[in-house]
Length: 176
Image 1 (cartoon, rainbow, N blue to C red):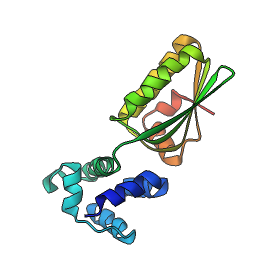
Image 2 (image 1 turned 90 degrees about the horizontal axis):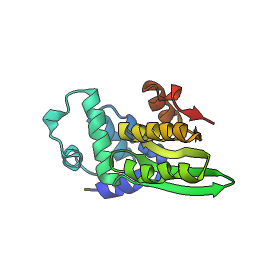
Image 3 (image 1 turned 60 degrees about the vertical axis):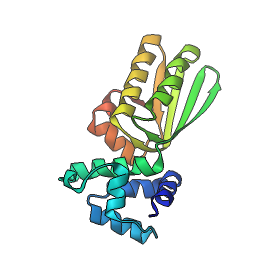
């Protein structure tokens, strides 16, 4: 089983991580893994994602499985690099903004509005955004409004922008 090596590749290679998240079937995933030199079975993937074969009933369920499997092997991580100058805080995000990492961003983002009138979220290296990540962005936007500050998102990839557009967040958030 080579799932740990796959997790390392997902963490270090954003393009590969995006390919994994776009697969639509177990067959397609296994082909992608094999093409990249990984050897494991579909059972290994389902075990990592903690699901049974019977739970993979539709494309939506398969995408959920892939998200869970990627999370299991990649060990959800969110990198946050903070820069502050002249009343502006920039948070450079990398990795996955999801259920297990959203609190990490919330704990840095919300207090940022106490010391800055402008907060910029640079999401260029953000590989994944879940509904819990969206919640943090919404709370950040509301906090900025209440404090008379601004929150801007910049350098969003096509994949992240697609999530923001599909959920209507592109109409709520500010982009730079």
